[in-house]
Image (cartoon, rainbow, N blue to C red):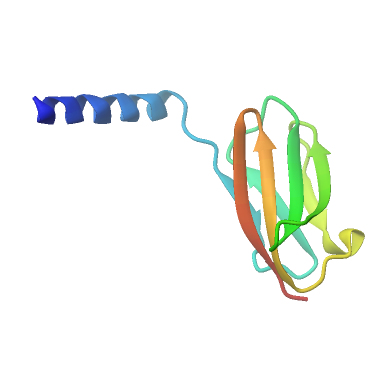
Length: 104
């Protein structure tokens, strides 16, 4: 009985991902020197909110992008120095958190 239950759960999990594959986020380049581009594997249906924080979690800047708009962060505009930063991306009901290394 336990084996049958496990197989059913696995089948249901794979079935959900087959219909709605999970959104994937990438930062390029990383480490970065002057800019970073944020990309998703699909065009979101609503605005995308990007929050940049330092490694301690102190918020530096929040930027909202429209669906299909290029998500590019220029470090000179944000006065970001060498170090590790956290990039939080909120799209639809999903929240992603990635680490960004800046080496200028």
